[in-house]
Image (tube, rainbow, N blue to C red; front, side, top):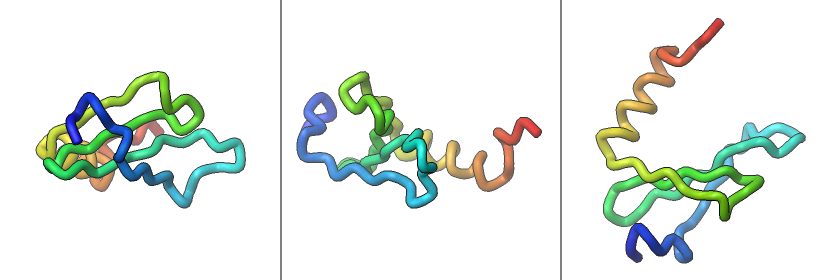
Length: 69
């Protein structure tokens, strides 16, 4: 599967998705990249992250780097 063709990607939505269904979906690709899209508008576009970018993002979440409160 090429990065331009994500038709075979297995998308996962968080089990913490709210009742309003505002959530993102992620797909872990065979080359280690991670694709992210809006679950309400899956055809609106996809962000792709290389493994190092995804690891940095997850690390930031775990250390509350993005906490605005």
